[in-house]
Amino acid sequence: MSKVTRAGHTAGPESTGTVTVGRRIVIQGLAVSGCVAAAGGLLKSAAKADQGELAQSLKPGDRFALEVENGPLKPLRLEDIAPGTAILGAYPIDSETGLLRNETRLNMVNLARLSDVKPDTPAAAASGVVAFSAVCTHKGCSITSWNAEDSHWRCFCHMSEFDASDNGEPVAGPASDPLPMVFLAIDAEGYITASAEFSRTPGGTG
Ligand code: FES
Image (tube, rainbow, N blue to C red):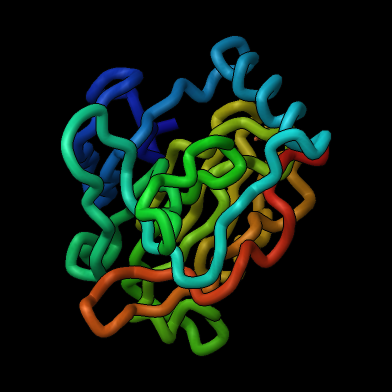
């Protein structure tokens, strides 16, 4: 379906970069194939985490960054996300240790900056930036697609969609639970910062 930008489709399955298709823009952090077969390992790790072995550990005060193989982390600032774009596959940074909290995929978040912020959008206080768990609430696949036209996240495993402008509510596909949100603030230095823990426990429930 051509309506949605598919992470990894243009730039490769494990690439970092920006993909533009028509009016849709996706900034890819971690791009993972959305197919069921490729997601097998991810489902396994999600199930393991759901059993309590690797609970999410995001805390208020954490900033966010993409994983890097070498070099320092680059915490995300408001200016790093233009209106209508998204950054996928970021992780919280432990505000005490400065280390990325990437010990579990349940900490992974997708961030977007809404161009049309509704009055009831909780992240409106963070200049239109929203952050949601990157783990689909259906069966735990990674959500790797952002459609700026309707502000929807899409999971390619079974095509669930979640409305980022309406608290992550499911709007299509088999998922019945909303995506966990992270309430945000922009700190004095312009960094995007968590102001609370996830609104609900991340992970698949289907
Ligand atoms: S795991 Fe996302 S739609 Fe099924």
